[in-house]
Length: 159
Image 1 (cartoon, rainbow, N blue to C red):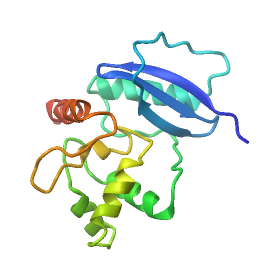
Image 2: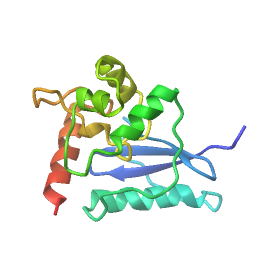
Image 3: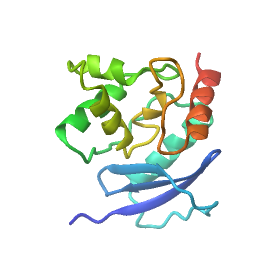
């Protein structure tokens, strides 16, 4: 089994737990823990520090795309949905139906919603950009208040 490493990033909307190997990031999820002091250890792989730095740039409004290596852990269908999510541009939104259509399975709206909810790479795989077909905010694992914050943040820094 490949060794996993953890690094916490204190974002404006809470602690984000970054988990990865020495080769790729496996998850970026909001933690309900309170503020932590980030401790970089000599053994922290560069991919984790790069992810940390890119998230920092994102929250400062300086980054719109992520370039560090990451790995999807899921079914083929979930991976297809997550890849489609990456096509939603910064500061734009889409719906489950839009994603279902984009993957060539217009009737898979509920399955797309389920896959979206299992995304472990928050922000990087921008499930926060999915809203209801009626324009209303839909569920978000990090909480609707965070989803709203992320959408407003992107709109404020979109040029």
